[in-house]
Image 1 (cartoon, chains in turn cyan, red):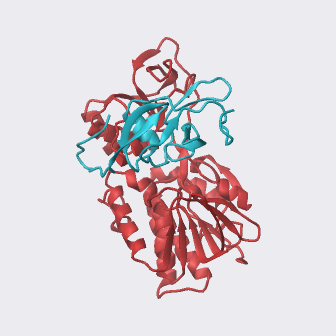
Image 2: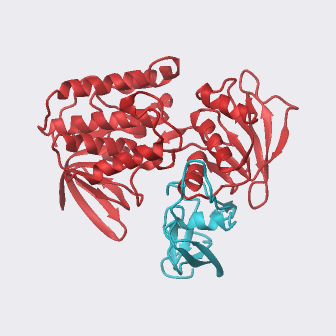
Image 3: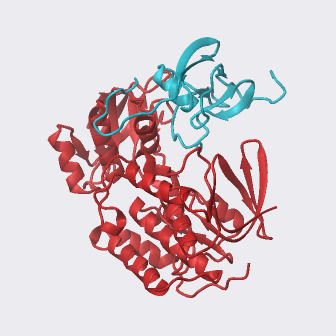
Length: 104
Length: 366
């Protein structure tokens, strides 16, 4: 849920942009981390663990824990908690380690 | 190969102060930050700081960040590289940096590592479910980007971070079901705890998480009571529904780069984990390599800023730079640190530092 009013802070958001998550059209604000836009849209599962395929979500938000790695514009292992959102991005839930050569 | 006199790794409270004070003595500084902005954790701290005037008492963390950023931007001696992460420090003194798709090499005369800390995890079944996140992550989402992490929160940890983040969540409109604290006492300042209690949030001391439940994301936790030996008391299990379980169970220094550089490291639990052996100037056992802030031992942002000040002055001094009254300035930074670590609440920190500080100046050769 987006906060519009806050007793102390004012939020300066970028312009509204559209992007896709697993093919589904979504809206977010330019420059905010991809995972933030997804969280605001109610997406909690960002990836799955390699061995037991357990769901993984937003955890550290500083690009440290690897819980939020996703495929963005065909590039795997993007740290979506720090990577800024850009108009037209194609964000996909990554399964496995990801490959730079396209689909496994 | 890029040249710089002092390379500072990390643009949080310690790194910012280090840059300002090293440049203040006349050194040329390059400040490297992996985020697209400076300020580190200060950028999400909406509470007013304690301490003295020098330590920005009464000023909110976010406003301290803005003030320091402005000083840095106006200082022609400081060059800032954003979106830049250090990849390695090599035996010949070369520091490699990856900035977006660029790969840069630096040969600095001195290095100050101010990389900060990362959040500790708590072991319990299903602790990997989405919706279980660190207190820093919650602050980022809520205070930096204005997104509420969830509606019903269970907080683990009644130290200062747990208490402050709980208050921030309440301010932003979330409901805190309870704050769980495994120890029999509230660890954070009682002024924060009292504020939260007045808002009707229970702080359950001697309580911890037995397990989390939920299918694709956390739907609740099972809480249980602990006895005086921290063992679970059977029959005290209670289910508490929530959509966010926030962990504020401490931080560990982000010290990988110090290991890689070959610093002598020591395991000091009171400082959050492995920290580098240092002298009174915060110089490590690797020549020309200084540390400041949480990477040198997890404390408050106020202490990080003072350490940055001290390391910045010491590094510039070792290059031959000086200002009038430098010795007094360094001594006054040391007394500021002693004040911040004074009293009962600083016992652990002082004990930890005593075991890792070597009061003989290391030889500077690089």
